[in-house]
Image (cartoon, helix red, strand yellow):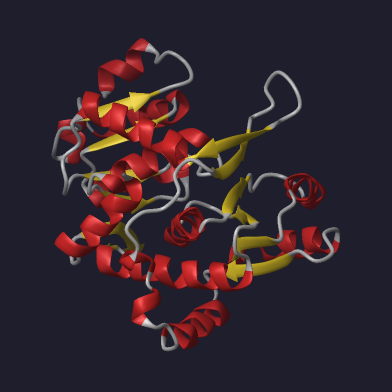
Length: 296
């Protein structure tokens, strides 16, 4: 369902926004054509150099993070999201534990990835978000053969282990949960039955992507044509709602409280503060305080 939805968006809505990013004081769209082209490029690289292997991803919420994650899922490899708050020793331990052969990381975490790699002989590291990486990918784009495109395939294997997501370790040592695309799709299908998300709506990619709630809601929204505003800094949540003209969002209670406080400072309600109502905010993990609920 997710792979097929991405193909459908590519074919039917190639110029629609899949993501919205900030450039200066503007909101700039990234189209479904560009998004799926970039996935295709990374799929080819993974199948050439790490087919069927386990690949870690380390970095803040970003467009490039999702490209790397989706490409790993669709390529037949297994993706291992890594908490960016871990220290290099902890990163190395987790990647060794799962048997990862590569770590894809944000340029903001070059130093941390470099330190971790010294403790992981044989594990390849590759950064995204740097000029060096962009130049490398531009060269590779010219070598791709259209017939080898992932989007020419009819389906992918959704029953194999596609992700290993570590638990929070709240009550014990964190454990790697083996997850499938089929399980991810089940979440998306059930959530859509309840929420009736409309294509063309706008939301935020705000929850940490190394947690399963962030991953599940991201694919839920993308597979139903929602344009995702990229907001790597949760402290700027109000600015992101305002800039990207957000219709709805998935949050944890702490983020909902930050948003409610900002709205209270700006006006009596979300509609008064933002100039438009919020369709819904779905939270999980704990109950909302009454004052938070009232101001949203």
